[in-house]
Image 1: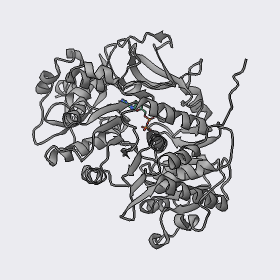
Image 2 (image 1 turned 180 degrees about the horizontal axis):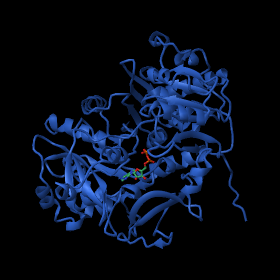
Image 3 (image 1 turned 180 degrees about the vertical axis):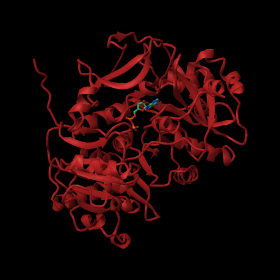
Length: 548
Ligand code: ADP
């Protein structure tokens, strides 16, 4: 028997029309490429989004067309999210940190018909030297007065909007219609596209608002450092308006001092981003007498594991820290914070320990962990296996990429995350490592995340990463790559002493090497791949001695 309820297709634009009605005093504050700070309310933004939609249609954009964006976090990028998907086209976000050849590959693979680019990023488009889809139009996201001097044939964003109606009869289409396209960073091989639908995007927003009630609460201000150019800024352009929050868009300056000043001036309550960015903010706060920016009470960290020392430092400043775990292929968030009731009953140390985990399973995403043969393992908080996921916000295939699709799913249609994890009875997720970053030593494995987490707590270590180095007897051994905190160089003995309470002797690194900086990926995570390449000629001390 069928239920007897109406069926209305879920549409992304309905989030914004709702926010304009329900939260007219909230909106978007943007630090812009032009050097000013712009303020728009949700009703004003909705008017501009309607103008944009009319403008895009005039440019010839039709349902299903891909429109690319190459931009920092700002109101125009947000407008493109809604204007493009509102008319049934696909908002394809491009990562400006990718090398030119990957950018060309992605533009051509997606066959984008229009590319909207921020003023400060026009040079990246010039560098593509025409290696873009034939007939692709380029729109510079600024007004006439700021249009750049460029050899490219370009249109002006504000002129596209000028004179267009500020309302729109938004078209209806099936909720399974594609709305957004994002390519994985492509650390190995070519990038692969995740193609989100209206349905998956709206459901993801609802799941995340329900799962992060403390961070997403109306009348407060949220700062996405996580970029709109990648994985939909963890869905914040949808969750913030849905929850009635104002978004503070930082633009292109993401160093500690710029973030501190913006957060202080705009009284940001919650900030979301990867650990490397928060390390910069933490240092800035320490520089300014350990006083966090005014009103800053909540931090959401994700993208890679947050070190324990960082969590402890922010918590000691009175900032509540939560981790979110997820993937491009999952829209991207798959976990929620720990229960406030549990946190109240735990000691500060227990709380911080728990927060080094990735949080608890979010409603709408199912987890299973399996052994090497694909057999299910128990969710007991101890047993470790590879994590597979399933749900309405998880991809069912990669965009036009059969080969990658074949490799990504098991026989029952679950998506393999490549993360080696434990899951607790209460859905608590601990990421032990990415399968390819685990150190396999003597038939056992060592978690690089665990080692890094404990090592960064040492005062002489500013940042570090573990790499696996081949070993004839043990297969692989861990080596710690360290960015020193000051002039002191920690010795291997001192490191072992510091870490021996938490690790068996065989799990401790065989060597320490010092570097000035750790290489980062296009999404701001430490790039283990680059490190492994950098140290491909490295020889472990025991073999250096034997050849000496
Ligand atoms: P990106 O493209 O942003 O790098 P990916 O989808 O490639 O995003 O990254 C997803 C991976 O990042 C996960 O599979 C996991 O290994 C890692 N990750 C994300 N969030 C966390 C977290 N909170 N803790 C540990 N690892 C994380």
